[in-house]
Image 1: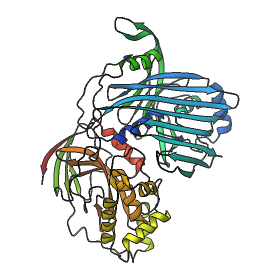
Image 2: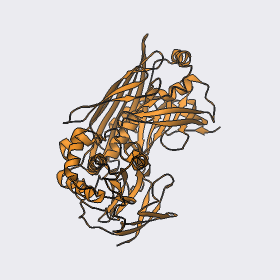
Image 3: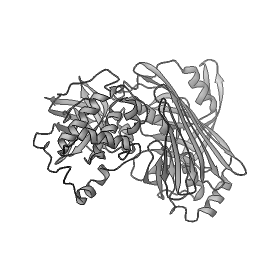
Image 4: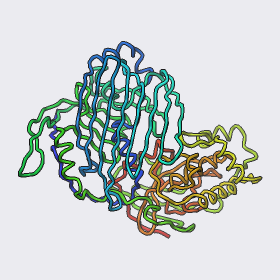
Length: 532
């Protein structure tokens, strides 16, 4: 057992931040939402976990009292804001309010944003309603919803200037949302290091679910500032009373994602999310007043933006081969190996596809059930990627015409998306049908619409996320891959078919996987060894 003191009001310490200038503003938007819902936006506990839910949850609910906690918010060592979590109780249920205000620097400008979630639950912890609001010039977003029994959640997403998007999502069993999951895990059973709890994760922003196992990884003591006094000499609040708090560490069993320390009363002591965002419980005056007094002082330029935001748009031709050295962080779990990419140790070589690979060994007219089953996940709709939407299907069929060569059809779709969408930064969650209506966006919007159109005519397509190397800098970028005789990278944003070798793929998959890229921000180092 160790004593883990925590500085009450950390002073920003500059660090090497090569990727912070090359990440994108949606990274901050995603991080804000993750910070607002500190275990990832929305978690649903599996029916198997609550086989005796009626009794166990009712008993746990009796032990949960009203409380309010205040937190210092930092990103990669920088003090960037404050947060609070309040639990109110009544005779009919609970209301959990999670609020954060964050002041980030991007492209030399201050980016003030607030994120809040209000969740109402029954006395048995079952979800009744939720409302999430992110107010920011970078990424305004509103998501609300309500539970329909224990079998579905109705979710409404509202983005500025666009029609509301609603979906009914099937779920399994009783529903709990983020702020109470670690709390319930603590109250429902005695915490013990090594125990594992399996849950199902649901993200209202992406409307996707996945199984998640949480493990009690450690037990420790924390020094928590309980109250503060004002020091006129220093011009800020300093600790007045420090309590020693025992806490247990809950982490995903696969070692990725968030990490949160909870006390015996089910209150968060400290949490860490992807992207280097941490919350640490502290006295209100130090969490809020010190941050408010310090606002306006530079905390570092955390983000430069995408290539589009930087006004960098390469032509249709780029390098055919790129050789790099990667360092600074673990590369395990990333999709760095395969097809155009070869990884040996910490060196990566990207080679643009040859003409032979660009010749399809199948036809749109000859697809059979075996082909469709093989590529089922790359042909079907996903949340916010509406492959069967009538407008999507109609446009895809019109672009394809009578052509049955998948390479030719994909190239037509690539050119149409490139020519039809205005190249503008976007900070909302990409939605294929809304992109089709707005006809604007950055790489995520281009990729989302291309993928929907290509899948609509039967071309297996997957989304990829990584970096693009342009004019000596790396920028966040997304692009699709299509199946011809192997997976081939194309880029509707830059109008490249195939994409040049300046594209470094790190993850494959939609929004549910793109968040994994956040773990690289501020840690990954890249050295270009050769480009030609």
